[in-house]
Length: 272
Picture 1 (cartoon, rainbow, N blue to C red):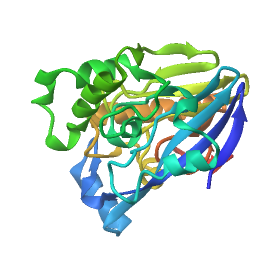
Picture 2 (picture 1 turned 180 degrees about the vertical axis):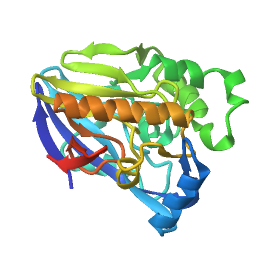
Picture 3 (picture 1 turned 90 degrees about the horizontal axis):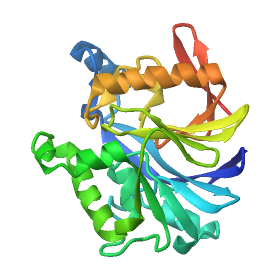
Picture 4 (picture 1 turned 90 degrees about the vertical axis):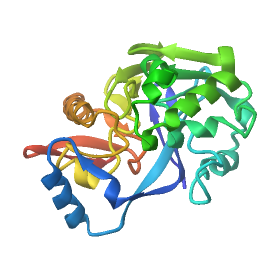
């Protein structure tokens, strides 16, 4: 099932690529092992199951995606976004641009077939800080194995898309689309603010993996984060800004579109 809403000049559709089941042992905490252990105990299940989403934006200049799912590379529980796009009448050649939030497999592997680009006409926008980090082979040697996938993705991206890769920084990217730095999950992890006026949507990538836990304690994270403390800082900053500005929101692991509202000393998501 797909969900669509209009924001500014764009009709935005959520495609669900599948469900990722993260081992509960992969939960972490930016400040306290004891609080991490308490969260694991309270969760009480062996996995933390999360939707894997990407987004189609149909606008005056054609069709673009924010992120691209896993493609066929993460097993039968994922990779279903391609079928969903086909059922919606979207062919790979229809996609003019893909805006990546960061270079992790559940966001970027959908760009590829085994040896060819999946989107033959698309320009790929990628945060410059992420691409610089994940092409630094010296940096790769300092990163735990579980966080090294981005280096292979960056190499494949440059090999298969070549001069169709565009490096971007924070700020306006396209009409009514602005990149916002949200570092921590990866060095260049970014979100995209879509639309104008009161109806704006922030697509925040992996700012949240498990809202049930992270809204109550933004320091809860996963071992996939490059800098857990910086990621928690980004999470708090974007929650405050989204609530203040009245943005709608969604992301790689958020169900549907939501608004952020204060709830005492924390925040809550209200479905849009």
